[in-house]
Structures are given as structure tokens and as C-alpha cells.
Image (cartoon, rainbow, N blue to C red; front, side):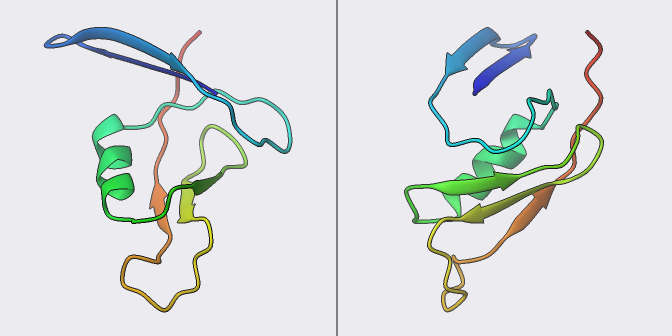
Length: 84
């Protein structure tokens, strides 16, 4: 997975990470702050990102979610169109 970010205040950043992937490649724009807020709210080491295309919400769910804890939840993030 290639993550890139650009803001007027902080400039640009690129990070590549290994993932387990199923399906075709897609490009999707997400608000980085929303992602960080969701990741900070879980104590799990891994999350699952489920997406079907770049114009539909992304479902984020902690791996091993048993639904018994307030921190074990799923959250949806709305993507935005990325012009190439």
C-alpha cells in the first residue's frame, strides 16, 4: 500500500507498507486525520480496510474484533475523488 499526504503546512510525505490484499488495485482519497482518529481509538495491532471502489465508504475494523469492548467497533470513512 502506498500512502501519500500533502498539506500546505507540512509539505509532502510518502510511505509504502506491506499489506494482505484481495481484489483489484484502487486509488482512494481519505482524510488522514479521520484515519488517525480511528487508529488511536483501537488497541488492536491490525485493522482491516474494506473498500469496493473509490467513490464508496471505506469500512475500518480492528482485526480480532469480538464486539465485546467499546474499542472493538467498525467505522466508515468517506473517500474523495482523486484526479490523475
